[in-house]
Image 1 (cartoon, rainbow, N blue to C red):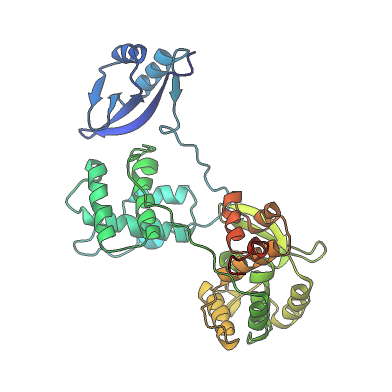
Image 2 (image 1 turned 180 degrees about the vertical axis):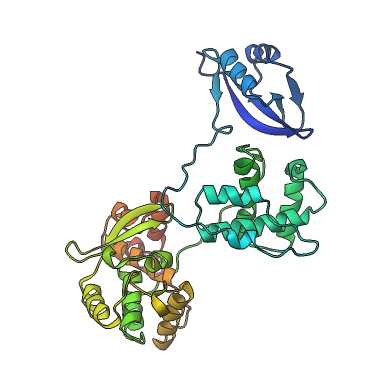
Length: 375
């Protein structure tokens, strides 16, 4: 097989029909092989050849190019795992909404696929909300007739409204989910540009400020919450999902289950936090979750945010402090004390070391050995 020769398969929609796009660099052998495919045609718009998308034609492509040209299926097939955790994904609220005059609701097949993929409720809510904004922008159009130029026009409208890059990316994700996952056309809109990724430094506060926040919490429960957010580097959602048995006092670890990316991990448990947690358990007697609201319900994200913000205000810290700033501070302070970056990556549950490397840009030891030219 000549490794220099290759073709890449794409999903195309031409004249309301699904097609297999075949992209390649100019090559006489490939061109001759394509001529032997069933009813091949050329698209100037997509700059590639295409044939009708059928299972038989996919097999013909494989047999035609096998052993002669390498076939890249990466943009044609997706193999993302379905969430295997036993989450209860409630899309009933979206299904049971009362009709709104002149407003298009998300199609049932979209809701069903979100349900089968077992996405979290927050993800479901985000995807449905953004997709409904999109389909109501094109009320008069059938969804399968919408093409790249239509999507660009919609995104351009959002840009003119000066929405954030995060907002734009969520809109793109919701649209791609319908065409690529629900309709089974992976990477159909492969030419849609995403906004440039912003590179913002994490906000960090000092150890002295952390201690001041802890000392200004209202009660023992709030004190434990702040200590775990900082001392274990937890995300707010991870703290809310902690069960009583997730605190491993023997090994001095906290078990985090089903965090971002559906991953489990262990992180640190401080001695002072454990001492406070033991007192808290005797006083508050949580039943299932480590932190519970009224009638043993799960504590809310808003409550945790208010606890941190109010304690920081009482401590006299001028800038707004959030639970995620405590997590950033945990990682930065570990790095400043000489902890290996790979170990910090594991504690934070980052899938890539590149995500953790951002803390090198704010850790003080990065700058200590650099002599200021004024000095």
